[in-house]
Length: 227
Ligand code: HEM
Image (tube, rainbow, N blue to C red):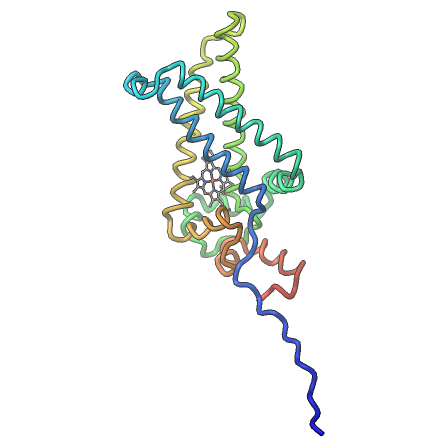
């Protein structure tokens, strides 16, 4: 009589990917990117007489307004439907700790060279600053845009300098976004982050090198996932 030994249960091999962003966080980023470029394009058509021939001013103004409304509505909807995902970002940005300050003292070279960098959490200190400044500039753009819109309907909302503040905030957010796009699409050591915004996951070893504290935290929560 042959005896068959019970099948050996092997643990699943650890995944080489880690989940970085939820669907709601990626959707919010996508809406931000689409509406940002929509507002930039229509804003340029309002600003430049040459581009006004491509898209006339009334139409550009209408779409500029629609993109701003779309961003605001999408943000409120995602906040209502997935408050935890938005709170996670807010908590992260609000937590500039000692390691972050050391990271920042290393200056912009940290973005390209991770040697000797203090271990970073889910977002590194540069990303926390980028998020905070982007949100700040979006608020300035919304408030000045609202004043410009109201000022066309009621003289008491017209203030000298509103357009200048709107323009300066635009220039700053465009410069910031150029740097952001360079790091997300071109720079060799950081462009592996792109998949995090596409399918939500990034390579575990890349994440360990760039966001070591975050990977340690998630591996401590689900020990069978660590390699
Ligand atoms: C097609 C254009 C864009 C691409 C390919 C892109 C790519 C990315 C990627 C890959 C990340 C995740 C980085 C990580 O793993 O931590 C990210 C995060 C982020 N993106 Fe974008 N992005 C784009 C447009 C924009 C625009 C227009 C804005 C704002 C004006 C923006 C603001 C942010 C912010 C605030 C974050 C979180 C913090 C950070 O990573 O710096 N993105 N983006």
